[in-house]
Image (tube, rainbow, N blue to C red; front, top):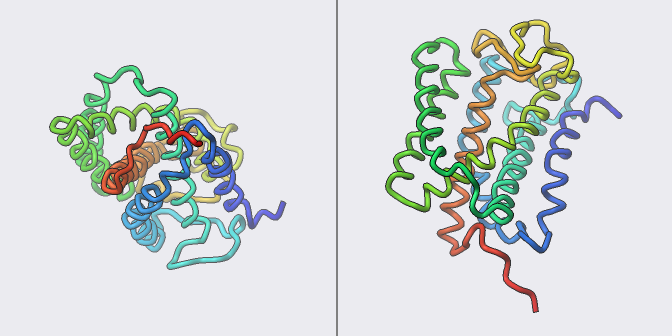
Length: 259
């Protein structure tokens, strides 16, 4: 395989299975596309300018050896696709779990988990304001967790969204770490699970300036990406649910019976 298409292959691999199963009879995720794609656009309106700014400042960047060479607004085409493929797979999982596990366990723990994440994120911002990646990610994660916590306390519907969000996020951590592992170190499994040797990570499709993150990695993936991933999924879920409600869609409801 031509290595210049490696990032593109990663994007396509992420979305391939969710896209193929979007037409199954149990969920028929395709019927929620009118809410999904505007929700992804809302998320991208935050994440794309952020990505462009951080790329320009050298907080992270991209190895041209693994790119197709098409750049749009200062970031590669593959990075734009990342912000479509990853959220698509995440919301597909979120919606599918609503159908297959309508009453997920550990409901009482979702609000404390959101509150704890808000506190942890705020603490990172206060303790490392000079490390721009974790400071920015921590600030935005704290804000969205505060919104989720306050809205959950006032609205039962948002409480359910928050619980389903955590129920989807935790199993999504495995493919998320695997995908980001490939992007941040092609042979990520060769590194320690809790890796402090950040300068030894090689063969990166996406590289990070370690002066601006926590300088600890899970295999090759910066630990900071756990906060970043939650923020991305949470923002997309909130937009998805709000848009679906405005369109009169009932997420989690079975598809209408076919005659």
